[in-house]
Structure formats: C-alpha cells, structure tokens
Length: 408
Image 1 (cartoon, one colour):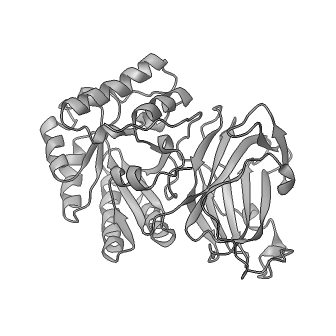
Image 2: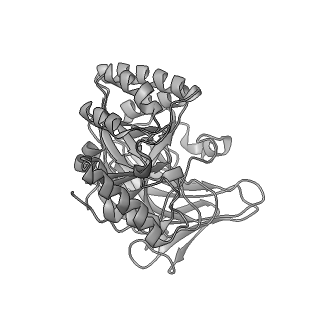
C-alpha cells in the first residue's frame, strides 16, 4: 500500500468561530469600500501571475501593517525558518488583524492561500482576500488550542460583494477576541496552493448500518462514489456494517476507510495506544480486501493531538477531521477539513461556493438518523443538479490523494 510520510507538528479542531461577516469585519477600512481602492495606487491591469508556493515566512514583519492588536517576531516558535509572527489582542481589544499588500494585484484565480497556525485559545483565524474594488473573499480554518504550529488549509466561509480573484490587492489575517479576553495566534509560512479546474465533492459516512440501508440507494441513483469509515473491531456487530455489506458497498464504487480499531478518541492516548488503533485497523482492512481504503483515516470524534496526527500522517495518505469545507489542494493531507452533519441549507451554501470557486469540499454524515437523513437527501438532490450541470464532480479520496496534494 502506498504511504506518504508528512512532517506534521500540530492538529486542527471541530467547527467553531463567529460569523464570517460580523459588523466589525465589514467596517475596518471604510476608505477601501468606495471602489477607489483607498490608498492603493496599483494599477489593476498590472496583475502578478505567480506560481503556487511559499510567499511569506514571517522573517520580515515590516511587510505587514498592524491594523488592530500587535504583531511581534517569536524566535521560540517556527514552522519554517527561525521564527514566526505572534499576533495578539489584549483584553481591551476586540481582535487582532494584520494586512499585507501585494506589490501589484495578484492573480489568485487558480489559487488559494494556506498558513501555518497555532493558538492557545478557542479561536478560528480568518483570512481575507480583497480585490482592487474592495470586494472580499473570506476564508477560515479550525484550530485546536495548545498545539505546535502546523499547516492548515483555509476554506471559503463567505463573500462581501463579488470578489475578483484575478486582481487581489492585499491579504488580511485576523482573529476574533471578543469582550474581556486576550487572544494570541502564531502565524508562519503564508503560501499559495492550486485549486481544481472543477469543484470536487467527497461524501463520507461512519460505520453505522444506516449508511447501508439509507445512503446506498440514494447515491446509487446518481452513481455517486462515497466513503464509509469503519471501526474495524466492530464490523458485523449490532448496529454496525457487516463485512458482506462492506463488500457490496465496495462493488458499488465505495471506498472502505479506517476509523481505527474501535473509534476511540486518539487525543490524549499514549503513542503505543494510538499506533495500535491506527495500525491495527490498517491490518484488518488489508487482510479483508479493503487495502485501497486503508490509505484514508477519519479521526474519531474529530479530535486528536499532534502525536495522533503524526501517527496518522505516517500511515495514511489523508486524514479527515471536522472543520470548514471548501479548500484548495491540500497542503497538510494529515489534516483535511470537512463539514460534519451540515443541515440542508448550510450544505447547499457550501456546495454553491464549491462550484463557484472550484474548491474541494468534504461532507461527512456519521449517521443518517432523524434530521440528518432529511438533510442528506436534500443535499444530494442539490448536488445532483450541480453535477449534471458540470459545475462540480463527485469523487473519492483517491482522486484527492493522487491529484490534489500540494507539492513544494
């Protein structure tokens, strides 16, 4: 089985954060929303078209304008080089925000930004791309507090106006503090990754038997591939998928992936326990004819620590975790974000953005009971319309692992 070993030093988290377009986010630069571009004198016709890759390693903070809070070099933490940028908002400030202008408008029509990030607080940093007319694309990622710096892939969460990604004049990084608390975020390795030519959608499920009884027929009607992540010790147990059901799903084009041997949370466990969970499930999958799916892992409870993520990175091509859906090529495939149990309205918004911005979106349904089943069925109907129109493509994790992992 093909393995990739990625250097990973931190972990991401579950869904969270405030509204992407709060009043405070839309009022920070009134001079830039009048269509004149504020004090930016660059000519939109002089657009820079650069290749994806590293852009800023935060070794020269003079390139950044501090709009709120503070920004300092921190030689004690680094993802690349010898230091990172430490962004801080104290208890008297609502947020911290920094901005870097491009020398000339940058063409990001085929790219998205990604960052190395870390925090000690419960905060989900935001990145804004602003075009020459002041329209903005907002991206966000989920962070787990208290872990070292690691790369995180940013997903679209909102827009302000109709952003022209072929003429981006500056990038902002911010973190919301709110009232009476301080927030610190470390940032490093601002880089750009490619996006697919057509939006990609992955559908994922847990090892619950409802996946077979309720999802299989719906997806078969549209010939959509999907992935079932199973706790291998429980295959055939009461309420879980049986081995024969897994074989049928595989013959239907599904991928059978790993959720560890027992789907116990990996965060906080010893390294030996983490390896037993991860490597034991791989052994079962390979021994029972599901070796292709053994390349892919679903973090139990969408939680982990840096040790668990390193074990997953050593043994799997991609590890999936809860977060914000709709990103570019994976810069950290051990930490691939997904939307978990989105309601129908949320899922449709995500899918529409996937089509519009040509992103990679993973929708995960741990079970299909109650409202989750109704939301799933409505979502698949909308997805089928987008797929029929050629606006998105429904794929399996093998497509992402083979074609959409960022390589330096």
